[in-house]
Amino acid sequence: MKARVIKRLRSASSPLFMTGAGISAESGLPTFRGKDGLWRGASPEELATPQAFGRDPLRVWQWYDWRRGLISRVSPTAAHMAMAGFRTRAGREVPVITQNVDGLHQSAGSSHVLELHGSIWRLRCVRCGVEVQDRVTGLSEVPLCECGGLLRPAVVWFGELLPEDVFSEALELARGSDFVMVVGTSGVVQPAASLVNIAREGNAFIVEVNPEETCLGRLADISFHEAAGDIVAELLQV
Image 1 (tube, rainbow, N blue to C red):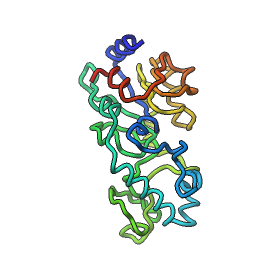
Image 2: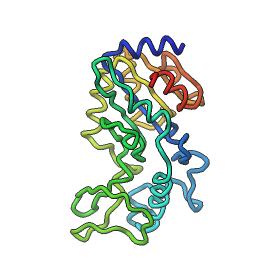
Image 3: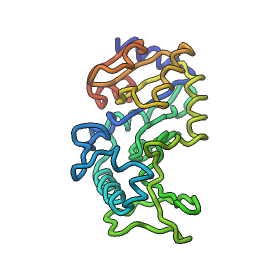
Image 4: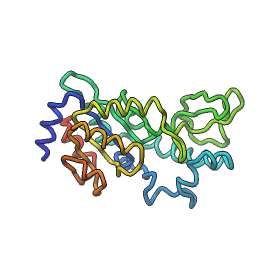
């Protein structure tokens, strides 16, 4: 199976990587929906909403500050590094569509990363809408914009739409791909999961890497049910 995947990848003209929380879990980060996702007895569904931020912005920021602190102490996994180092036959970097907000793909060296759910390292003003980069951890109060408005994490919360420009580019890439490697995602979060279906409809060769069986298995040409680090590096031969 590995030889078949390597052959198809090497001959692909428009390969694409798609990733979810599982690729970062190997770095030691708790998954968003996993058993370690609770914070002070609260679930992400209770904290990652505009309503929660409106009621208690400091509490929401304390959770995100905790997450930012965790991320700042870990390094990209072997899978992140392998994706960043892989090039097509034409020498082009392969785009990465990710549901993750941790920025580990960029830390590994990838530059063409589509963050469907935003970035935990960007802040957005709820008043004027300006976005700024920020990697400060250990926050003691809610950060403020120069206009005086509250700054929130520039991530997609429950009940919010994905960034239209990012999702449009992701759709275009999925439609035009002839090889898709899907790593560390269960395929249940919409509309991100629909991208695999779209690639499949376009006859892309689909490879799934996930330690557990998922609903994406029915779409995949080949599934590897093992940790991402070693197998992704082997398949990409980096």
